Length: 86
Image (tube, rainbow, N blue to C red):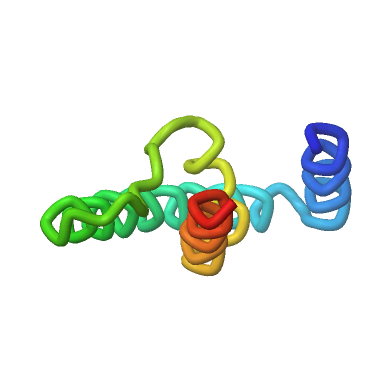
């Protein structure tokens, strides 16, 4: 997984110039921040409803939400739901 992320970043950095590289980095940070906020709000509502579908906020969840955005947050909740079933 780490090799795929590093390869993805290398291709993105080589494909972009200096200015657009900074733009890409700011977009990743913005997606990470929005993912953190959405995870926190969803976890709050899951706690309020007494559901076991709480996703921990850690480095892995922030990385997934940074690279995939809100679709990554949805992916995390789907993965948690699948683990809850099994």
